[in-house]
Image (cartoon, rainbow, N blue to C red; front, side):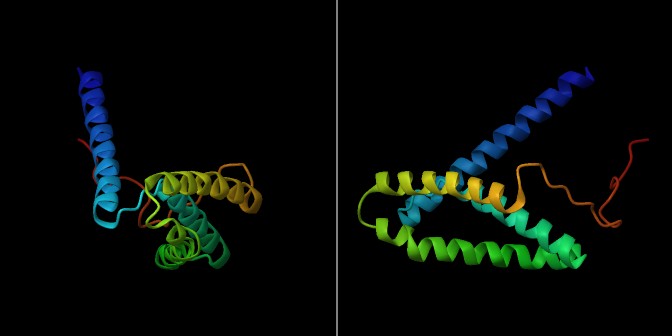
Length: 134
């Protein structure tokens, strides 16, 4: 019975995640008329920024503050230099550009940080469980 409950919760979690992704994409497209398929690639770059800052400075919390700012700067740079050129041309150039950016960011991460998975140890305050079942 426990496995069934776990699978139901996993399915619910995945459904909510897919709903959030779909609603985020449709909201961005509906309000700004931009189809950006490179959101995940920017999240990946932000995560690598965070790992690099945390390992370089030895401060996890500083990395939590600085990584989103650096990622936002990359996003603004991409929007100002590349995405703005596709405005008014329909959604297909935006789809092609942002899909190409996914591949470019993926390869850039491999060049800069390497192919192996990077890990980061959590600070003691965040390690462990919040509460244990008794």
